[in-house]
Length: 273
Length: 262
Image (cartoon, rainbow over all chains, first blue to last red; front, side, top):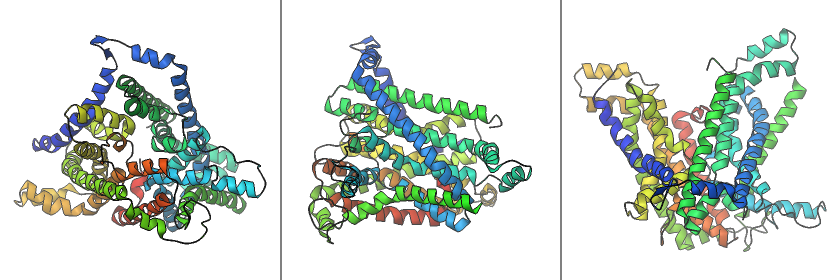
């Protein structure tokens, strides 16, 4: 059904987003190609030839990749277990997974500062049982960032996977086993492919989320920059708006390439959509 | 079967210890009577809870956060509910594009949005920081409002609306008297989900601070950089309590399935 009045309903929202989001983003991207009135790609050249910047980019990618893999390895079995539970237990565990997700990222990152700090819980425990002789330097390193990011995004992959896995017909697994498949084969041939859409969506969310997260790297990463803290630093501390716009554009490109690639993989694995 | 399940159960338990343990630890340390964060705390005291109310910037920024999240929420509702209704009710060309526009605040990195808005909204139009915060937070709340309200409308039978219209009720009257009451719980859930999204936001607010103007999460970040006393732990506990209450209401209103569906 069509209705002329509907444009009136859509217009305010579209106008608002165009004015305050779409145009600013387009302008930011466009501004990277102009400097002193003429076309240039100098900003990108400068960014991509500076070893310091490349190191930041590499740290960001490495941290995000490790975070994503860890979230899959921890989240997949946990989600599988949760999806098999009865409604009541499942509800409780889902609520326990969603709660941290809704909790402020400042609070969650701060909790890891208490644990990983030089005099933190981890170091004082390890020292007191004599496992180490001097405190480990974990806080303000990429490792601390990874731990913080895994903590931040693990619930996301768990709840996404539970949402997909609970729709898998348990009879399929039984059928596979009764036809002689070992439990491992049945799992690999039935559960894994049917969970794939959830796994891919979950991985996109975690990977892109880690690539662009600000709070956790800012609190736990110390001087170890990632691309988002580097953008903030260029814009606010260094006042280099051209470079900040270049970084912003690179972040947008990476985000959309990752989403596009993963979607492509998803369609390939699941041709029926 | 039993053996394998026990292993899996233990693994899941450890995953949840990892997820919730840090939040439990932060809660314990908030009662530390001394000036340095410790776990376990060396005693019990409400001292740092009292301190929250003595740090003036926490109070001011809490007020700013509440203002931005509540007024922004109202704006996002005014923009989002009609849009969600139109997107659910009508089929038309370009719907896919519009959906993409409405979802874009979720896809574009927050830190990029914050920067772009600072440059091309606040500075270009010479707006006060407050207005920038309000606009920015309305933008990030909009997709959540639209998504939750649209999913609530997908369970609504539009035949009921047709019936009211054919009986002579006006379009606007029908919307307020027939459609809205049916999606009431969806709207409440949408308000709360959007509120949490806005209230906890760092990525956009971090670009929008001025002399004396900032939001609570940004103020907490600044405080942590300079102090390591248990005030933030105490504040964290209060925030977690608010989060738990809001999450409980969301669950009552529409269940938790919203979070598992993507």
